[in-house]
Amino acid sequence: MSEKKSESSYEDRQDHIPDWKTPEIEWFANVYVGKEYKIEFTIPEFTAVCPKTGLPDFGSIFIEYIPREKCIELKSLKEYFLAYRNMGIFHENVVNKVLEDLVRAVDPFSLKVVGDYNVRGGVKTVVRREYRSK
Image (tube, rainbow, N blue to C red; front, top):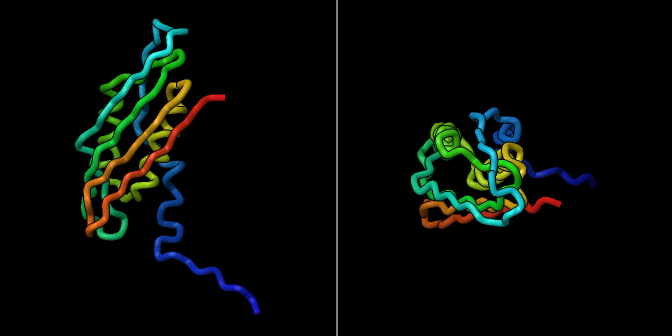
C-alpha cells in the first residue's frame, strides 16, 4: 500500500517568495562600531494581501536589531514595506522574508522580526523569528 501525499490547496503558491526581488534596503555606516545598542522600528500600518481571498491583511511589524557595521536607512525601509502592499503572501512568509532580507542587507549581530496581525475570521496571528550571528 503506497502512501499518497496530501497536498494543500496552496501547494506551490508561495514558492517564489524567498526569491522575490524586493526593493533594496539601504544602510549607513555605524559610527559606534564596538558599542552594543539596540535599534527598534515599528511599522504600525503594514498591509499585504491574503493569497486566498485577495483581501487586504493588516498588522504591525516590529523590528529590533543590534547593528554591527551597518544601520538600516529608514526611507528605504519604508519603500521596502510598500512593496508588500499588493503582494499575496502568508503572514509566516512575510516575517521570514523580512528577516532574511534585513540580515542580507546589514549583517547585524542579532535581529528580531515580529508580525502582529489584526484579527481575521476570529483568529489573531503573531509570527516571530530571531537571528543571531555566529
